Length: 455
Image 1 (cartoon, rainbow, N blue to C red):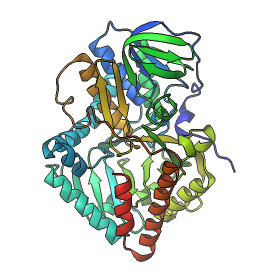
Image 2: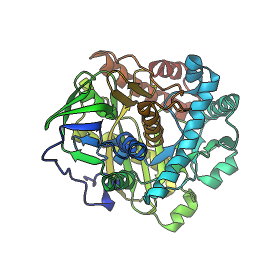
Image 3: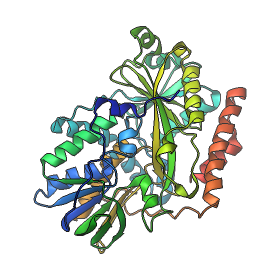
Image 4: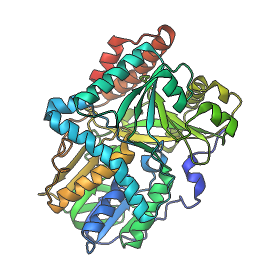
């Protein structure tokens, strides 16, 4: 049976691309990509420079990529570890990066409240459940590491088995890590609300405009060229299709399912009263949330990487991954047996070769970039936008000293090397999880290899 697509699109019928007939020949700032990075960047730049002409160019429609299709986690998670940041930049800047992410969740709440955007935002924290001794040990290590970087229990702490069940009654839960700096939201409502606010402030958004290449002070598009002082490339996974950038960002697919609205009896058993987002400690990442209308929206990795970094609409669905997600959700919450699954969708997220997100600005060329969020982009995009605004304006701030500023990752390997490497990594993660499910023990060899592959 074919299910409807993205759950988040149900609330609005205005998701089709409104193709622009023409674009301006000049602008002060041109932003390529109308996802969260592009929209937030326009928001902060317009606030600081209200007289600037700011144009956003989008090949499809606003929020078409991961920004409008993600799992709705607005968290302080980063794709790079504190240890890796410490190794490159020192403990002080590693801590500063994490603290900036903690602040970002509240900054988003502040901004959407000020703008009057109702996107079902609720800060109920996030819970990472441990369902094996191996996962429990990794959770303790995670919290111990956080303490070493001065992240205290107000932000991150270990829960007992009973405390875990009081938050979420997940099958086999032994313990959990609770992250207080995490919220849940409706991604489509957020991107639509931001776009509406920007248009009201005379920021120009042009949909159906394909950007073919970038050069200093000029953007080359399917509708002509635009001369500009500043260019922000905010294309994340779709950067791989931009001329000259095919190996900078790898598009990895993450897919989701959603249940029908659940009864109060089911919710009384499952928990998540505070709409706490949830996952567990397996290698093959999963993630879920209780939506404002009482569904479980649940996603995970496991979809194949496609040769040549290909991105196609039919990749947004995968029967095997859908079945795996349904099976996993029923395994975690057996009480859901007999529940209908109503939606299935997905899309690509962007990964740099070293799994290190970045914000860059070259004043000589006027070209800025942000991305490589590896699925943690809902909040990270906001921090990136504020950082870009400071960099572009020339303002020195605590944001411009963060360790992701002007970080450059090496390029991904050419094909077919990356095709085999990335899909092998996915298989290894699955093998390690299956072994742990059967034996209760993790595979140190595989996990070390996965760590090396993802830097």
